[in-house]
Length: 124
Image (cartoon, rainbow, N blue to C red; front, side, top):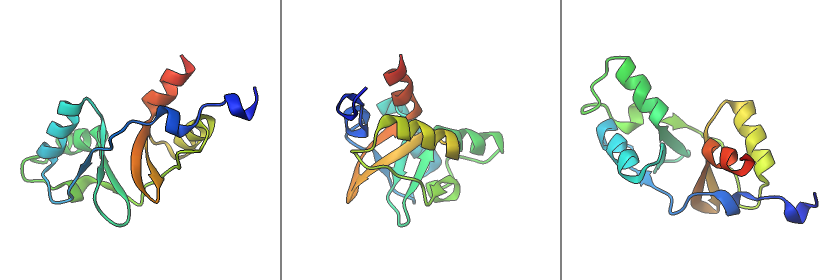
């Protein structure tokens, strides 16, 4: 397979990118994810952050009240990112290496999200 035939992140990423404020409640984040049928949101912070459905689930399992809990209390900070021109094989390797399911796509600013579902879709 030539490099021209390989799939790049820009061909698979989800757009538009959904974001949420770090001051929003975890309930708000869960509602946005459900309404948009997605499992992660970029949190508008520096350094780059993300909240995933796993973070929401962990908070619930810990008995925390999602109506009082802020996104900033459970988000993952300093997240790995990828560029639109990266090959999907490299994305799969990153997800395996870092044990993650979502990678924000950055081209100067956020432009999309690529997930383990996108990798699975490509392979099926």
